[in-house]
Image 1: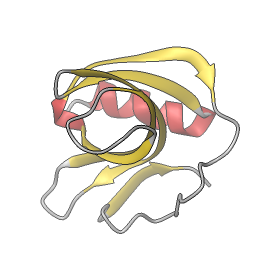
Image 2: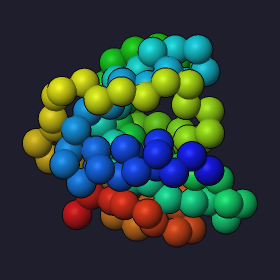
Image 3: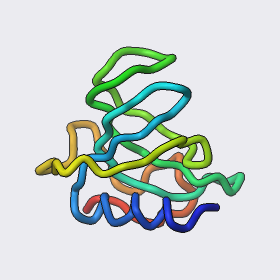
Image 4: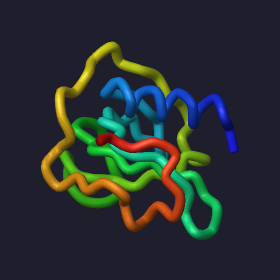
Length: 102
């Protein structure tokens, strides 16, 4: 696990900062809502993708990202004001929560 990436994502969640990531070869703009571990021990990010490409489905849309597959991560300098519609605390996909929006 890359603790630096996890710490950046957790800080972005706590301050509602929008992130820019490269994932599966696509640039994506995401609003991070929760980060935690799966039952298999993978670090997962639950985020609302507002822009960019995707292999699956349309944009904007909720996504679950495997943090180990994030190729690049940057903060955009933008913030989001509140959780997106459809967000639920204590995401069932995350066995352990590291950080989440309240």
